[in-house]
Image (cartoon, rainbow, N blue to C red; front, top):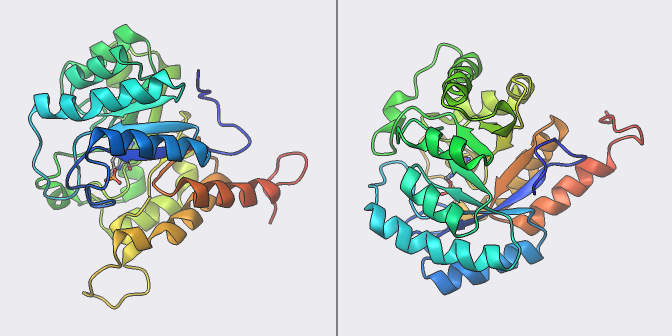
Length: 282
Ligand code: PMM
């Protein structure tokens, strides 16, 4: 089983999006065989766990019917889990989480933190598996209209604390709750940078922290004039490796990324910079 205690370096969660329209990889792994082959490549590159998702959450995305989501993810989870990969199922639907757990998934990654489906928390409590609760304010169709905060870091911490309480009330063991600030979800670029700058406050919530900046639009805006198009998503892996390095230096439990090989190198650098007593060097 995967360790939920932050180790010497963060775990690497490789992303397999079985979707026709994800912003980050544009449907490259939509066919089950291609998705399974990609999952194997990510494991070979050093991924500690594989996140399989069948619903695109890009801003403005329309949700697939549940049957379609099941058709996309179940064969991929089944094949990769049978080969020994540790799989998280990235879904907001309890029925999809349940089918994926039956197919061999080991944890549930819900970008809505249990808010989108009233049955999710009870299902996870019953299954006794780790649950990734991401900060979320509503479905992708109109989430950017909710990117309004007094102090984004304080507000995200408050909303995540409320989620933890509700999840515990539903029977999920606190030690099974992993938190995620939800980079890019109802957040503008400055909100995302503030969350990264003040990652320590999120780690201090006392739960393992997952950081998912990979290929997100705020990275594509770096160095571009105001109002210019961001760089293509596949050209954001270097900046992603740097933000993963930063996450490692600030105690993240895991990073969720597309380019596993580059991330492993970045985390190796972070690890090498620690002194032998495990302290972060200056
Ligand atoms: N981002 C995406 C999808 N799932 N899950 C978690 N826990 N955290 C994230 O930041 C997150 C996620 C969207 O990105 P993708 O299209 O590259 O999968």
